[in-house]
Image 1 (spheres, one colour):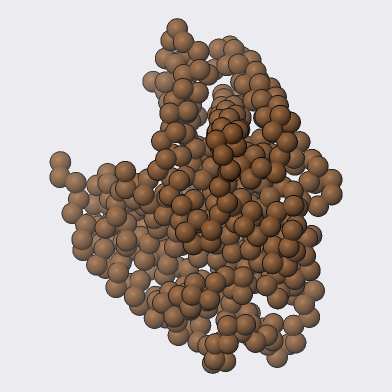
Image 2 (cartoon, chains in turn purple, blue):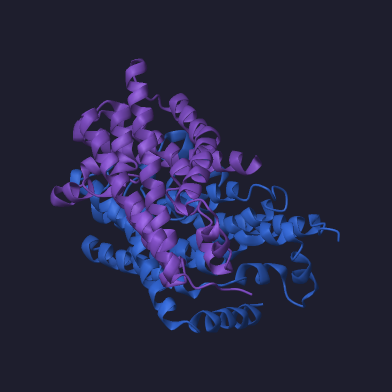
Length: 243
Length: 262
């Protein structure tokens, strides 16, 4: 419980610092990327709320530890899919973290700077759908990263690579829509965009809803499919460690 | 104290070097991770020529100076973050019976030399920014002074955060808001932040002396918040005061430690 409060506090502090930088940028360039200042601040606090549920800084899944300790052998002989079990666990954690770590910083942002809220139930429903798909994409990605430990044995290197890719290419630091030229086009086609940029745009009503959801669903399907293949592959690959 | 620290740091370095490929990769990855923050600054300046009155090389100068201090202190003192695990498990007992300072032992605990990649990245950014800025040589002396000051401030912050963990053992993450938050704050000129926030980090927690106040002197700029000129040089004094406070807090924290029973 206190850990969650501490997490929410830290999220808020970082949210406020990010918000000031974005405000300064949008004061220099009003209307940049089709956002006004309030949209930019909203973007900042909404994405800050994503950190916990989507585990954007990595972690969440215990698979790397279980591979290292050898417990993964037990998971693999269970008559249930490892991927489905991990997903169920991850969705539960996402719901909890959204409540305790996501919503308080956003409320604080609303009080300090003012943020926009979706108008009407339709836009809320659209955002919820997009948010769920984003959590799915995030899980599917982290699951792949976690399983790679079977081949790499050490998870720290790949975790750092994932952290760099996720924080930079998701829109977590600055919106992808202000990335210059080809870098912007590339970033908005990659799976990380489906985690942060797309649901934030759906929240703000800046995205074409059908396109946005289709893009997210496509990446979710691709990454979950790869995850299923990898789950199958590690049955042949896994080295049981530990005594 | 320095000898004990160096000896333990060298032990951990040798342990890490036992896996040379992993060691090299971690240095490179650390470099890449730090590059994300520079990437963000570059993306921001791809959209504007001036952010809250500061140009790209000026912001990179402030970023580089602060981050040399932040990442080297993170490497050398930041290990103190793990103190809450030792408090919870009761393993802090072992630190207390060894014939060396608890502060030295906790700061060097699992010393990770691979974080040098991040220091290197900050050095490069500062070098490039200084080359672009053409700072007059009469003011360059402030650069090493501000980096040393910033190191003392960050080390004190980490120590304070460590001492705080004796009280909030269950919520160590709250400490990140001050240590990593301080690092994040000093990546941008303080003119982007609100007036009250800047007042707070000037007069209450002296984060403004990491790079903002001395940086204004190096860049030859007036403070947009209109603080008096002598504050540009008050950094070392503020750092000293904070360090004294941190030392006191650390002693109090250790005194509070009650082990775990069994």
